Image (cartoon, rainbow, N blue to C red):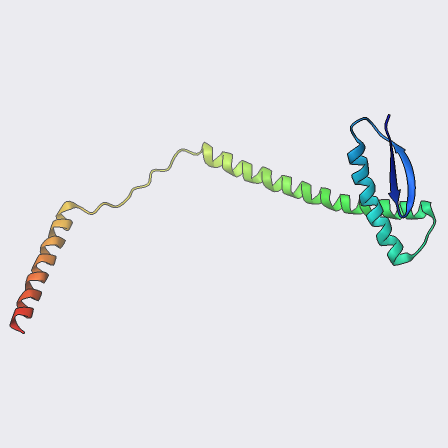
Length: 126
């Protein structure tokens, strides 16, 4: 079982972990050390056990908040998935697009031609 030396609050500890878990242990120790440094800056020097307890409680509080956010996000994702599934289960809607009849196109073209002819006549007279 590998032994990893970690430093928390300026104090070194040798900790055993499972093979391959060393980087996770070092990462966790770095988070705990950051909390311990924050505590030391605020409160000053304190007994090792108290410092580790307070730093652990601060990390646990942060973790609980993140777990609450995760649960809320998972709930939102599940609701959105249900909406997508419900939408996919509905039969396709028929959408009718209005089409202008050919007669209207022809009439508009005739009116445009007459308007151009009138404009030509007015232009010729001036």
